[in-house]
Length: 370
Image (cartoon, rainbow, N blue to C red; front, side):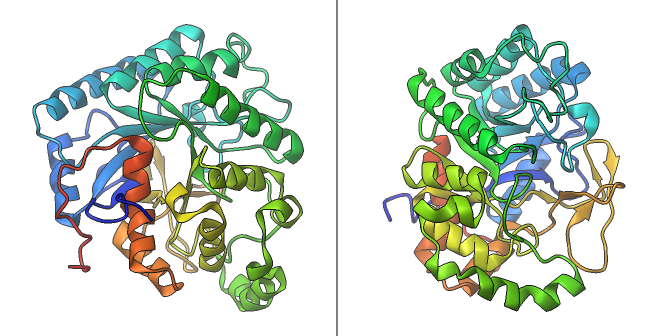
């Protein structure tokens, strides 16, 4: 552990909506109200948004407004914002209209927002390959990652690896490793980690069952988890244990070249698997993410729940978001035997280092943990 373990507020790294506000609806996001909400929960937040191509100008205006308020000291609990997409090889629970391949000009416009507070954008290493929803997009080959990543990183915008296809896991892993290498060879206009991730194990090819979301699945859970021999997992054997994509991400995180996000709600990923993963990657290289949405509306799509869990689903039955706040996830991690300093690192310390956040409210602790 290091100085980032303590005395920094927890950070909701990847969240989609607090209260009745869908962050992706830029017209309705009251930033002052959002900051007050974060203060009431004693967290900082990086609101994560979906972006339609025809809303790019509107998003730029929103980010400029955010930057002006931030500079005026009005948003101490919102140290940055983030995008999920648009360059995604697989939709997952993402609205289809928010998945698109930007042109060079559009990438430059997105990159410029790094100067105003855009911290990362989720993108798929295999977005340009066969099997990707964007493979045949007219703009897909206008710019490759050898141009896109340096353009983003020069302004401090990090790529967040995620939304892989399942067609060729080995190729996806190799492309992820190539992206990390490009990032580390590029000039960086920010500080902290140059590469982060969407949530580990979700929306990527796996060789294990990573979650047990139904009543029937939970009846098999203990037997399946025991068969995985989690204590016996090692970084060098992960390709055959979990699959080459998560294995590559975990090894790059263990090397300190990636800050990896993982969900501790017990529904996106089984808690025992999540715990073993952060132990292997190293707690200082791992971040909790909630993927949280509080209402049944996200990115313009209606959501619903089932009786089996607290996740939000879109109409096609695909998981779209979680619902548990950070304080609940911290309690879940403590219940897995992680120590208080480790949990504080997962919930805040790593994020502060990875995103170069300023500590504006060091006295904050999550609600219910004072």
